[in-house]
Image (cartoon, rainbow, N blue to C red; front, side, top):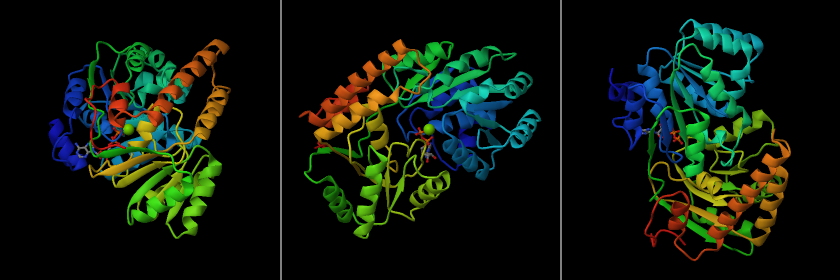
Length: 401
Ligand code: ADP
Ligand code: MG
């Protein structure tokens, strides 16, 4: 089977998207790969297609439990043997999955990075035929990135203990040079084939507004965009609650998502939105990583996020179907205070030394300045974004506020 045949047969697509085929071919040729592609570009297929064609198992390291479950479900529905191992399973279920995996039952095995430290998993890996290790959301390894996870730092050591070295693929949507260098160094990628696809999303309109009454603005916007599906991001759980209630009170079909809800309610609300039973999702940034819904036609930010990486990732959930979509950020000075508060309190629970925590807080403050700059700039918003992500843009895109 060729990669294109696998793409058609298992995923039902006729052609690769920009960048996908190059990455697939590099991996199949045994070369490490680093793919930097924006959210929605289709990174998963870049390792799922090779996984089907390589002889052994592809281990996928992924940070989010809900994301792994969705991907495994989708793969199983496509007739691909895949499983996940994470803390949502009981010990007995984990043992069973590892036994099946060792017996060659799966082509793809998804795990959270913490799993790599478990001795049962290590002895499985020492005996299994691992063809490839995929590191999804690879920016989590970098302290310069916005989602640093110390457990990602253990990946290279895990790989170095394997009886032979599999090919390694790293995937991320974060394009800054520093993060790329960190990924290559900390994962010990061997002269990786590196590909960065365009970050511009021409079908997205970018806007910043400063309405006096944000709830009112959102309500009118959504009422004006009848039958359109969209996401409203808020900085706090409290504002999620109040905005959601307000929208429901004027008859808008809205649901909510934040870390304060039970896991059952979160997954129910997420499904209601993804399957179009609810038109609007009001959520904190806990919602969305890995969510695959193509017809999101607006992303409104009730508050300014704490950095431009988060903003572009969240806004980028709009318009994955290629249709025109709008991303509007509602800015007020109070948002800067809220973001500062979050930054001050965000590193308390990390496993960082005091110096590392101070350095992380300093970088957070620098990134916040860039974010505030976006809200206040009189330049073309698209060129502001693309400049920051290292892509040149002439400006004056005609599709921003
Ligand atoms: P990312 O991880 O880069 O954010 P995903 O891998 O979740 O993106 O893919 C986003 C969407 O694009 C999915 O719905 C996926 O099925 C679709 N997709 C990926 N590759 C192709 C392709 N070659 N043709 C059509 N759709 C694709
Ligand atoms: Mg992804």
